[in-house]
Amino acid sequence: MGALITGCGAEPGEIPLSEIRPESPTATPQPTQSATPGVVGAANAEAHNGLIVSRAYTDTTRTTSAIVTVGPDGTGQRQITQPPERARDDRPDWSPDGSAIAFDRTDPRTGAARLWTVSATGDNAHQISQLCDTASAGADCANEDERAPAFSPDGKQLAFSRSWGALDQAHGNQVQYSDLYLMSPDGTNVQRLTFLTNDKPYSGAVGNPSWSPDGKQLTFEYRTSATGQPANGRAIYVVGVDGTGLRQLTPWELRAGDRAVWSPDGTQILFTTYPAGADNAPGGGIYTVHPDGTAIGALTPAPSTTFYGGAAYAPDGKSIVFTQAPAGSGPDLYSMRPDGTGVTKLTNSADKWLSRPAWGTAAVPAPTAQPSETPSASASAPASAAPSGGASAAASASAGPTPAQAQGQGQGQPKTDDNQQPGGENDDN
Image (cartoon, rainbow, N blue to C red):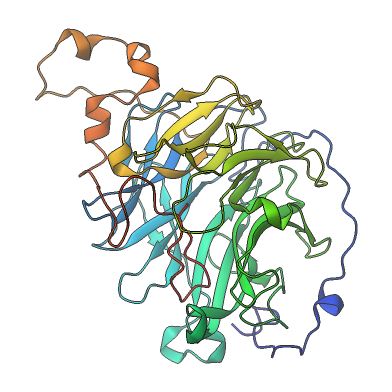
């Protein structure tokens, strides 16, 4: 495994960043078609707006979370994964053909995350082979943590963040190393893509990668530690799939984070900002930027008393799904046009704290009859008649018990950052 993970065993300063991945300019991509039809796992040339996948809490203390899907109109909510008690399934991403969902699962005993996949129908959930064998763990496997898998446009690779090494107990248990990796969906052909922390241990954590539509670049979040430069910062970076062209996309003062998502034509990158200070603070927003870092613009109003979470484009690029929590409320899923207009509430599941949505191409299942329910005027009404795209009572109930308040969290706003180690970063926007 050490041979597979290039640079995994390098000591700090042994392989200077400038010698491993020299920076080079990257041209702004032109509008492009998505993945090629006929390739296994690839998306169809004609985009189809299918199911939305999200994270949802399943218990009243918000210590257990599962992966759920909902229809494009917010109805038909369905729990896809069945995590053990206190485990946390999170950061889902669709395969290009809509047949599978990749996600990470945090072990409640160790706090470490591993990568999993599950079919769109909830079948065949299994863990992807982890990079390190914990039975023979050495220095390169200490506090091993893998998160935020993202399928490439052709379905042949997964990008993910990996953290490992000793913990800095004097500064919030910041992990020693954290960088971006690539591998095949079956866990083979592992490659290390970035070396941001190779000669700067404890400087920060890499997370939430996302692919450009042509498969040539990735965006990712970089969060600096209390000892990083600048301290406790966060920004979006871009890197080529070959490791070249590493550059910072958003300025530190914007505090951009979570998964920055490319528009289907490759001309815009969508991202969310989070204010400094205490976790759960409102006042951030949803923005777009060109891939060359120009034309940063806000899609949501500012200043705001609203909390905004992760956002994603629909496969056809004509809509955006995002997380929003008005002051004093839990988050729900909303949609809007790419210019920020036409905001519509999709779900009425604030007790489940839906977050980190991704919009895929999986077909929406036909509604099933509920034998135990007595037909009524409201039940027989078409879904479009529901208030502002809200989920039906049956759909809302199908997602499991209603979560309420996270342990150690105040009421009224979603929990944004766990900052628990290992794993460098356990952000929870």
